[in-house]
Amino acid sequence: MKTTKDIFSAFEQHLQNKDLSLLTLRGYLSDVQQFARWFEQTNKETFTLPAVTPTDIRGYRQFLQGSQKRKATTVNRKLAALTSLMSWGMQSGQITSDPTENVKSVKQSAAAPRWLDKHEQFALQRAIEKDLQLARLRYPRRYVTRRRDASLILFLLHTGLRLSEVVALELSDVQISDRKGSALVRRGKGNKQRTVPLNSEARTAMQEWLAIRTQSANPFIWVAVEASSEEGISGRAVQRILRRYAQDAGLPKLTPHILRHTFAKNLANNNVGLEKIAALLGHSSLNTTRIYITPDARDLERAVEELES
Image 1 (cartoon, one colour):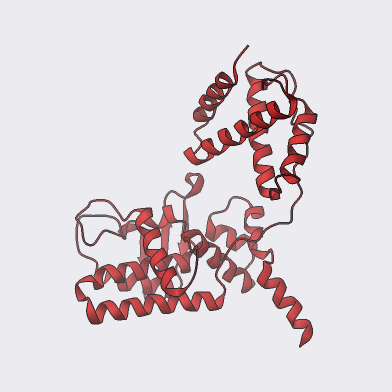
Image 2 (cartoon, helix red, strand yellow):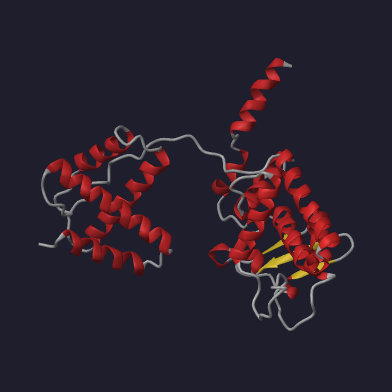
């Protein structure tokens, strides 16, 4: 009989063969190992796949919701990890039935993603402008870097591109004229290609950077300024830039993906159809895009306040 260590070692190899991200792989392993510990403490027997019953899965779900007071998203994530483990157990012939098959996940309201409201967008814009003014006045040697930083963040805000998509942009991918422009995303999520039109704010941000960008053989638009490199700026560098602006603007936990959500929410608030928003964001399913018409806490607060007027 396989030991618990043997089971999880083989399961880890299975996950690696599925080409999951390292973060997802570690999360799945941690979740199933936590279940195994709970199983042994609760049942006073060694954990094996054939020993797990549907009652165990339901009991663990109840334990997470009750004693642990875990949120629905956390409970469902852990149940998904167990489903993956048992599905692998079926495929490898270790079990003949799946104990997770008829165990329902925890129902939850659709959660709206985090985005910046108009006041927060104003605060970010102002922090960027103050940073540029300060650099021009006191640190002229840093101005080129600061101009790149400002243009990059504003471009993200007004295009909704993913972080990986924006850092991969090359000079030949962007076309800009006086009244219109576009950016070609060559390898979006799922290796899909799309063309994103650029509004006036995105065009201006791009043009102001390209006007002072050092001419070189580097094909990438967003390049390192203070170091010679044939590569584009890294995703981590962009995150550091955004954290600096967020601190200046008083916006905690600001990420590139929040800028993407903000772009989409702005479109939805301007009554742009889901099909168009999905095309701009590179979504393959409208269900993914539908979150942007899901009201968040601020939307609900405004709705209630309007009753008083």
